[in-house]
Length: 309
Image (cartoon, rainbow, N blue to C red):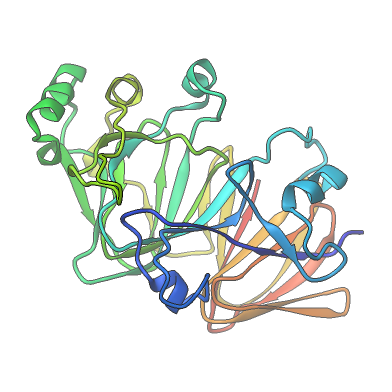
């Protein structure tokens, strides 16, 4: 039986990122501007490395090739299903949308992208963009993009620490400045940018927009029914992932149907398994292989997100 393993993050520097992940969450070098810390990833553009134990220094993708049943009993060894990140938005992210699986399969080599956001922290007045104010048609949206008035159509939602937002594919959205977020998503890196505030990258270039693709996949949502969860243990569930939040002692079972990924987003926790103890400090991740069986999370005074398929 394979033991739980710790994973080192993959760090991404993007123009809107801040320094909280390096100064508060011990990512990279103190003071580094880090936009995203990929906590669970097996991709060519980002692959975790195992820290400690039998597989110390082994790439997560190589571990999965050797242990495909660590994902789930039916894992075919092709694409790992999920991507989990910590995101530090010092400035606004682009207004964007993601395709569903069908559109992605027809136009890319990646998956579609449904995701959820857990608000780890939020500065006063922080907000997100979730959908649009009304049910606009394609021509209205296209005209707003061309006229530079797209922001006036967006639905701005104030957010606070501890809330969860579910963002299905096709929902136009943006993480705005002043937010620290844990994002659980399909293992996809497709983003169709609709608007990026005319920001320039370090080399002076504008980031690429994807207007036609975005217009093809945007689905209007009722702005009065933004799906938000602010309490309870189960904070997100869809056909791609289930996420629970623990802030106390909890016995969990990693059965053959799914691994359990643990991410500590507040305080310090630890797990006990098979007579051993493994610390889970702020910002750290532990991957418990499918089929491992029972283990215990001690999260008193902390917050741990537990993700399964």
